[in-house]
Length: 338
Image (cartoon, rainbow, N blue to C red):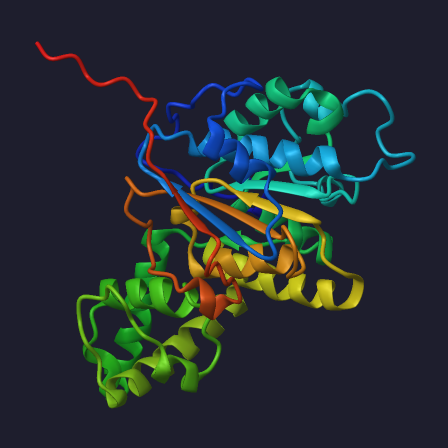
């Protein structure tokens, strides 16, 4: 599979029930959250139906409307992508300096829904200053912009397991002590822990907290596994095979280097369905806006379990202490009893 056929993140339900997004749809607490100025990252959570997505949309609109006017750019009419209901394909041009607010979520379809609703809420003049995209696609675009012309082949689950079996068979034939591991366990450990936390060294793997993993590993077992992961990673690199977690971690490092050299790409970042993001995705989000006032506005659904890997935001440079609010008023109709 080529990079033009990159996989799309999916979820059990990709069409949530959105609250109304008209200008008068906010209650007093929601309006305060939308309009407040924060000295750093802010976290808003709530159960389904409490208007979290409405708050995220209004916040993105509010931040974009407060930005100083720019000359040039798109002028007085919306860009072609907005008029067509989307931002196009995968060109590096999509990461534009004249869209200084990022509204991100975890899936392609949710991003499309947010884009349509933002345009309805804010109008083209404001919406054209907001880049609405799912995080996987953004990682791909960041890598494409930093490394134009580089192609990548995507690693599927079945192919990954076959490569583990081949590696283990070779080790067993050579009398290696690491041959007794289960390919499925290795694939999940490599994906969820090594890639999930963007681990690049033996020492980091020895130290990482493997929260949620079904089997405990002692130090000797971790050291043995790291040899396998290093060999496996070398084989993937030789075949130019990638997973999206690999690419996201790579994009995060590229973006951190770019930000140190040229400044952050976005003035403000708003994330909807933040509970779905993995550590590597959080690394990328953190790199996209410089730490400071109103940098990150994060909206999460308490009714949905985190997707994938437990995350400590503070360990990733995202400190929400004193800036966390829970929405409690539900606007979702109660189911009728028969």
